[in-house]
Image (tube, rainbow, N blue to C red; front, top):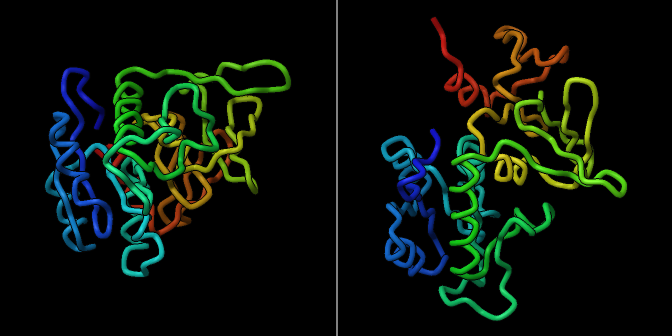
Length: 234
């Protein structure tokens, strides 16, 4: 589901120890905001509300009962993390996400409302019509059209972006790239792979793989349901 260019995105704030003012300041900025405080309530709200962006408290990252919830959310929705030292007031030197921010910092938790709002607005603009991006290769910036990407694979500290006849390596996680790409065409199918739905040749349900651009990409149990929700069956 993409964003309506004329409307603000629907947000879900998954909030435990994060600043209680987070939902309030987002609502005051014109966003439709829901809040969840338990794993069960979070999943129920996702199904009922179908939020377009999830705001996640960094304080939940090391809590066992939340780990599977986060994995499911990351596979389905853009997820923005709020730092433990979150402040509703912008501070000098606070990171603000914009088009000049490097890939390495895109996935870092936000520490101020200014930074959070900037990232949300960037996602909204991306969903409204981003069709390409640039990556540095030597001393040149190479344009990559989203429609040309077959799949993306984790390779150590890098992600390999596979086109028809070549790869580009970028220093960014799959989670960060999903935020950058901001396109419903890209679906995560395992911890190490994101595929472009438009380039699927076939899905082997028995083997648990997706054939994309001559490669059998494995589909993990965690992400299988998410893949099948994006496939039209007749």
